[in-house]
Image (cartoon, rainbow, N blue to C red; front, side, top):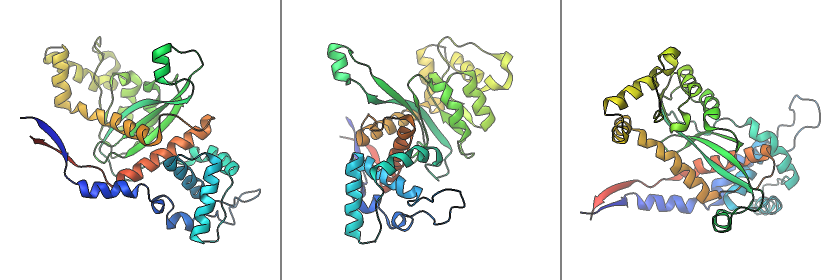
Length: 314
């Protein structure tokens, strides 16, 4: 008998796919009501005309419909004219300038209570030659990338946190920063062997969660570091108890539910298929706001509906 995956909620999922293209999902009544900034901000200088929510809405629409900044301004102007709400549209230069600071203000991506989180990173291209050209003919020009670090809830598939860094930043360096902003309800975090470092285990101990990270092949017991490496030592003893080889590691991963970590790669695949694997912005500050807007748009698509698959025999 051959096993085959079938979608059981195809009708609901099909409607959610249609809703992704609806402008009312991305340009809602709440966004229109909060389009203008408060007249009195209490700060010196000229008050802002447009609110942060208006700039964020513009960035999300730009990401969903793959628009350049100038085309985004024309798109928003036509929407406001069709809706007849009597509002003006920020210029493309305003959206570009305001997005630099907007990426620093946005914190929460999801309000759900999560207990498990899977963490991984992926590369996003700024400029340079494509993968096919490099594979066929080799690299001849400069290629610049950024690393997007994601923390995903494996139950709801929503992105909990994201951090964009240069391509030279290691995964284990960003892990403690992710743990600082992690909700206190998180009980377990899943990561690959790149996070098998002392600073990552110390971040979990400070947070109060359990790291499910496979020790490296040449790992040794570290009793001299106290409670920081206690969980790692326990995992290493379990693997050695099963035999210490690759088969033992496979058994340990199944018992610990480590394979849930692959759902982080699923989220990255969804991100790149929907928004592409490159960045439109050129500065790191704008790129942070761009990736944050894309992650928020991906969470909105997730809430609209996800396929519920079941294995069946044919």
